[in-house]
Image 1 (tube, rainbow, N blue to C red):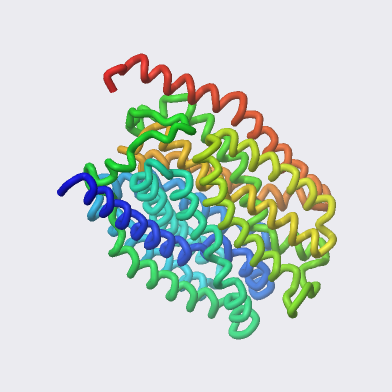
Image 2: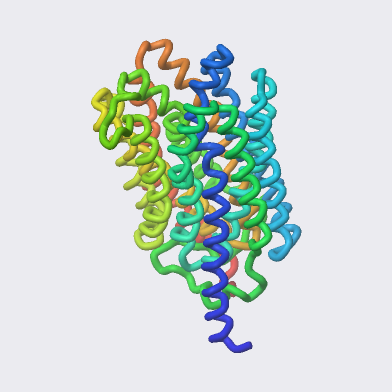
Length: 429
């Protein structure tokens, strides 16, 4: 097979792989982004405290992230043809089963079991799809990872209205049951079409992007964990992820607290419904957009741009969110400037530590999302202590501005120095 046929076949195949993985992400989006729709109905039906219900969300996010190093290692160890499809198929079974369990949960303990299963399954699917994207697209890593992550961020747009209709009609238990079965089955079917690139299959795309700081060395997980670059990325991820997860988990409660939840905006749509649709669309759009931007102006510069705007958005939502139209606008801007962490950080990680162990290495960084999840219930505590959401929004705004400074003045020179040191140590490579 000549070079041109390899290049053409790889180009066609990698875009097909990208589409399949995007489909998987769309199908599992509700396990995180649809959660807020179920919180109030569950609290009303069982008289469970909202803070205790949100522990289930924290469990979901924690296991969605903290188990990914094991899941990523399995995907890498089984090889490109078997690993991705096996891990995604098992994940699909777990997420489907989890929502079926939620539909019958009559105690918080059972709800927590469902959260543990859905977190484990969703993490397996997520990390495998993201890892696949970084391997197939060394030349367009930000865009490809952004498109994969967009499926997870925007996928819930398709089902927000149907889920709300089922909750309002048959009840939240029916919504958990039927959407769990549909989403789990669909992901299971798509799993068998996923594979990673074979050795040499992406050779035509492996030229370095001149706009980016990219290493030619592949760090093992142990080597990566010994670098200050990884731990700086980890801290930055935690700070931004915690602020965004607070908005994801609490947006319905915030709208209700501001008195705008059920105000009709247009075509019979309430503020909350329009906000959820707009938020998920903006969350999804942010990932490929900022991924593409980062391919062209650099990862750290893009982080500074996005998180700087995000800090302003948190501040404005806290100050002006009592107006329903401004609530929709600024909530959407928060999601637009938060969702891109799931394209920027994986791309930066693989740029910094190489593609060979990409799925496993990305999984270690992704555990930062799990660590940040346990900060989410503190938003309720702070709100209850101060009597309003204002202090919560001030805190999240400050966190965004801190990360802007870290990206420009610490991470950027650190990654340049790390890459330069490697070139000095290994000039032949």
